[in-house]
Image (cartoon, rainbow, N blue to C red; front, top):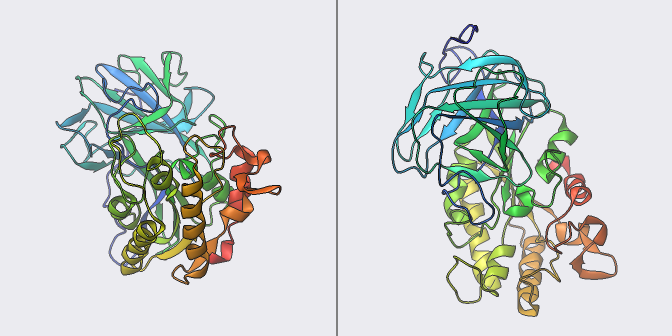
Length: 398
């Protein structure tokens, strides 16, 4: 129906006797449907609508497959059809390919389930932008999503999955929906994927819209496709506590978001500032809780390292950035941050440390974010700050 030749399906791994298989080139972490951070389409879902989502891959490959999530769905999620192609300005796309699922153009994802498309013969280059388009014919109800404040998603009424010019896509949103990953077929069997795991600073709040300049994006630019760099940050996420707004605690989600990804070699952990700040302030939708101590956060980090090591994954610890002047800053919290950072630097538990506390500090006030790197809220870096964060990583430590 598209005037396109459907790609044949293949096994999720290489044929017997052939090295290699699938590995991630782009990911995002699943979140419960919610409108807490900003208006989005996750609670209402979709009905006779087409959603076009743009992502930038980190490494290239001769073929791809796309991953979808109904992790937080309470009913089966029907995808009536899907395509993938090379992104062009706005919602335009070329090199369009239909996506199939077990040789069919449609699929149903059960509640709590995941789905991978068949192989699509669309060769991709490192740092290339792709557009993934989904058509939902029947009402979906609330859908699993990811609040992506720095990326634009497009929506059209009716079935426009085969459209190339993008003119029908008249609505937009700063989130990703149902889409959870892009994988490439890599003939090299080595573990060579790096995952950035964290909160809104990893997720890129404060970066420029559609500029692909979050710190993991900037790291991907440094390595230019030599290995995959995946972003598993969630705004508001915490090491120790679950929230409907900001996902499961890091200690709970590390397995799904990092350790279950194929061929992960290294994880960079940057988590804890929200545990401190949220326990010192009141936030809508988050119940009050006792002050978080340095000992509690350190125990949480030890658990993250334990889980990673059990899977043979190398662990890099990142110190918590300065946050003096942020909305939830307190002197008590600053003492906890200092204690946690001292432990990260000196414990010897991590395979390597990237000291963002020092890299990002104001030269005139070590407790504050450098004004040159501040997006304006004293907490989140701007584009220059994220570039500085990526530049601070010793590539040899990865």
